Amino acid sequence: MKANAVLDYLKACRKKHLDTLIRYASFPSISAQSSHAGDMRACSDWLRNHCESIGLSARLVETPGHPVVMATTRRISRSGSAKDRPHFVLYGHYDVQPPEPLELWKSDPFKPTVRQGALFARGASDNKGQHLAHLNAIEAYLRTGTPLPCDVTFLIEGEEEVGSDHLPKVVRKHRRELACDAMVISDTGMPSRECPALTYSLRGLAALEIHVQGPDRDLHSGLYGGAVNNPAMALAQVLAQVRDARGRIVIPGFYDGVRPLTAVERGHARRLPHSPEAIRKMLGVPALFGEQGYTEYEQRTARPTFEINGLTSGYQGEGSKTIIPSWASAKITMRLVPGQNPAKIKEAACRYLQSICPPSVRLTLKKGHDGEPYWVDPTGPTSAACLRALEKAFGKPPVLLREGGSIPIVNTFSRELGVDVLLLGLALPDDNLHSPNEKFDLENYYRGSVLSAELWPELAISTKG
Image (cartoon, rainbow, N blue to C red):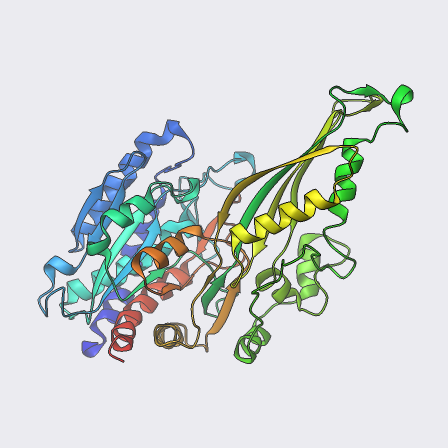
C-alpha cells in the first residue's frame, strides 16, 4: 500500500465509521416479521446509497422477498479490466433477528448505544458491523486513490435470518457477474481479540420428525395400562437406543466418511483459549458429556451428533390426567461433519429407527431440511493469504477454527461458483448474537477494516500461483 495511505485513512475515520454503523444498525430490518417490510426496503435503499457514496457501482436486485444489494469496484477500476484482474466476492446480510424479549435489553435494540467499548444494537455484530468493516476498507482505497490489486463485489442479502430462500436463484442468474477467484464471508466469530481465526469447517445438518402412533384415542390408564404399549414410553425407548454409554451414535453407517483430524488441525485446536470447566460453569450443567476419546472442542465442532430438539406427547396442562396418550413425537436434528452426506445419513437413521420400533406401535418418519457440511483446505493458498492478513491486522498469530453450527448458503456459493469460501469472522463469544443485548466490539470493528485492507493484496497474490 502506498505510504500506508489506506491504513492512515481508516485510523482518521474511526469516528465517521462508527457513526455510519450507528445509522445502519438503527434500521429495524427484521425479515421474519412482515410488519417491518418497509424498514427492510428503507435499509436496503440506505445501503445501496451508502455503497454509491463511497465510490462503488451499486444496485438492488429484486426478489419475491427482500432485495439483494450488489455493489462492485469493477466499473470504476482504472488499472486493468475485469477480465485480467483477480475478482473476489464479499457476502453479508442486512436483515436481523427479532429483538424479543425486549425487557431483557438494557437499551433500545434499534437505538444503538456505545458502552464498555462496544456498540449495543440488534444486528451490530450479526451482520451489519462485520460486512460494513469491509466496505470501510474499500472506501479507504477509493478515497485515497490507492490502486486495488483486485476487484471486489459485495453481495448483501436481506433474507439470511429466514433461510435465504431466494438467494440461490440470484446467484445462478448472476453467475457470470459473480464469477470470482474466492468468496469472503465475515459472519462467524473468533475466540477472543487475542486469537484471530480463519474458520475452515462448518458442520452440516439433517432433520427428521418421528411420530409414534398407539391407540386411535387417549385411553384410561387404569383400564388399559399394562396391556397397551404407551407411545411415549415406546418413543423414549427407541430414542434411548440411538446413543451408547460412551456417547457414540450406534446407527449403522453413521460415521462412514468422517474425516479424522490431521496433526495440523489438532495443533491449532490446542492453541484455542477453551476451558471445558469455564464452559461447564457458563452453561450451568453439573458436567459436560460427549463422545469419549475427543476433547470438548472436537466434540462440538468436528464430530457428528444426534440431537433431540423436542418431545411431545400426552397431557401438558395443570394437574394430572391419567391416560395412555394416543401418540408421541420428537423433532430430531443431526449435526454432520465433512465427509458425511445428509441424504445418506437420513436414510440410515430412518432404517435403524424403523428396525428397533416395537411391533405394538406404528412409527412414521418425516424427513426435514438439510445442509451439507463445509470444509476448505486450511493449508491452501487462499487460506494462507487469510492467515497472513489476520496476523497483520491483529498483531497475533491466527488460528484455524472449526464451527459447530451450519451456514447452508456457504455450500450454495461453493457449488454454484466453484470457489473456496473463506470465513473470517469478527464476532466475539460474548457478542450475544440472536440474544438480548447484542453488541459488536468496536476494536474488532476497526481491526476488521484493517484486516480487509490487508486481505485483498494477499488474496490477489494467492491467485498468481
